[in-house]
Image: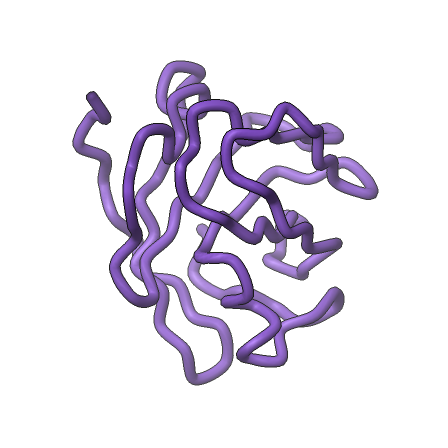
Amino acid sequence: MNPTLPIKKLNAGMHVIQAEIAATPETRTIGLMNRKSLAPNHGMLFVFDQANVQCFWMRNTLIPLSIAYLDTDGTIVNIADMTPQSDQSHCSNRPVRFALEMDQGWFAARGLTPGKKILGLQ
């Protein structure tokens, strides 16, 4: 069962994201496992205490996701599309403090590419 997590409103240009915050080792490990869907414009923001190269996989995750790795200021470093129930690792191109998971294709459909910013992280 997924714990109830706080929600933070983020902005990507004119787009508003309702992001559940996973900021503890336990909540980051569980992530979006075992969920069957995400509400429109909802996602999960993974918050790390310090910048490191972060890697994610999709074991026990049932929905296709895209993940954006974010610098401390919200700049998108890189984006990866992830396949459900896969152990394939997807890593940030450099150390980051944040990772944002959304429905697969969400970033591409809104023209959000590396170098663009997600606001409201702090």
